[in-house]
Length: 472
Ligand code: PLP
Image (cartoon, rainbow, N blue to C red; front, top):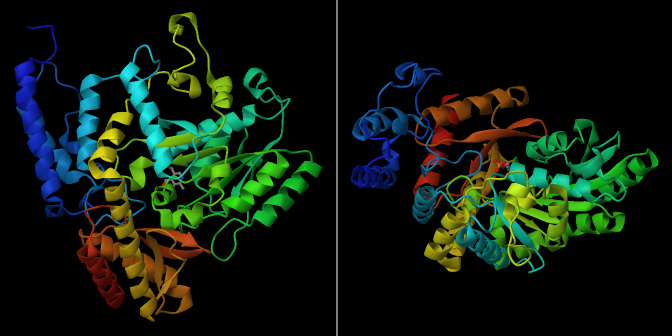
């Protein structure tokens, strides 16, 4: 028995088969139902309860992959996947991800990842520039927006004068974090982990377009100060998860600067649209934030995972997170990033490679044209909804997500009717939609963000919605 890794020639042969498998998968995604027809436990029942004692041939493993796994996932790459927000892996991104796996470069210190670190510095700078943000922003990649926001909440906590939370813990301080009623649950999780607790979160009401009321934020901060709270962080969401509303960043930034509190911008989904100069007015003021998160793994076609965290004061993150035990000490300080010092993780994936691949392959213009197409598709879909009296738009469409609801039924039955419509559309296997609640009403969401999605798929979606409504 050889005690080494897989033989290089066996690896080469299997790698070619894997390349074919993925190319075939991407070439004809629509042969699959976007949502597989499965009951919980059905796949597990077909897998052995224990790991094999002796090794198996790679062909057998790949056969099982093709038979059991590939057909039985929910296909995020499918052009009919219009649920949640798109999270699509583009060809160039996948190739970068493969090569990163081959290198297995662990981007914790410059010393053990020089090219990977400097590529990350470069790609972060490219993205920042494409988004129209000033060079005063530094940044890095993390796995998810949840973690980017958590790190920023901890940095904001560190920045509270006199608190010394990094050294002393919270010792009973009543920290207050603000966000709109539409803010994503990841911020709540960040507040929980950072010791702020759910009681420390104050939700600010929104206007009739689901945007945070900056005037009410200012009032809430004043009231909290009177009551002994320490206001320390506000979160503006540019592209909320339910309706994609865009909080007024400029007005919120005014309040934060006046009050001396950290402004974190959650543009996990919406931020991608800032690649388009014509969309920049929507983001006006975000350049005054202390930190911004944008997810390339959402609307920028990067294989999961890659979240871009930009910050104006990198030293605050370093003060909050940098611990350099002897075994990590190197002489390379100053000119380059030792990225582990800016967050929780020591070991970090080489995410910049896939982002570099796709930025180069699409080019800034290619990305912009695709984003414009998604905005066009969503607006055209919204226009159909508006033109049909049996349906209503539930929110404005500032980005590429449409919130709608069937309304041709008695008010008290509308939630159940729309839930039924959703189930029928999803049972078709051709389109997958998700839902939310807006003003406590069951709302369907159609979110466009996959470069494979075309007019044909939105036609199909509209037809399925109509048929489902007729059949209820
Ligand atoms: N913030 C917003 C506005 C989101 O819509 C989402 C997910 O959809 C997140 C944060 C969480 O993203 P992640 O899965 O990268 O943590």
